[in-house]
Image (cartoon, rainbow, N blue to C red; front, side, top):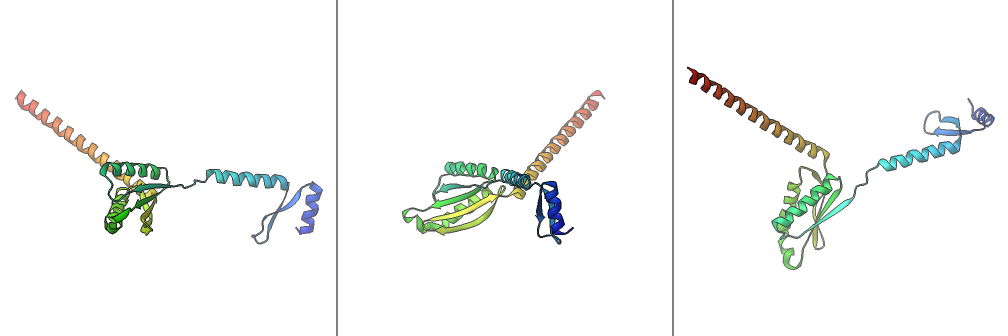
Length: 182
């Protein structure tokens, strides 16, 4: 159908001739109400935006000489952020002469990375920015699934061990009962 025939058919029906996919060969056109079509496209776009997950960047601030309990609290908070699939920016701030011990700070950031390795991957490796060292971690679905599988396997192995132990104990009790009867 030619363009002129399509326009005439659309006018006859009281609708519009709308080019649906201009990149196709030949371009695809439909006869429909353009206002309604535009409204439906807006609805689809709004629905797509609603389903989209926005990734927030949460910040954890630490110092080079952090105590064990404080470190545990920071790791717990970082785990919570990663489980919500947010990114975690770990900021290690130096004061005064602490700048002389950048190696200790790098070890601390490595420790944090290792402790969170079951949930995360490193987006930005530790680097200096002025008087602070930063590292960015993000949620890693494959690592989380791998850890969940390892936990499930460990629980299954423990359950099997308990079953075997119970069977061995029952067998032993049975043998003792037989020998006591004889």
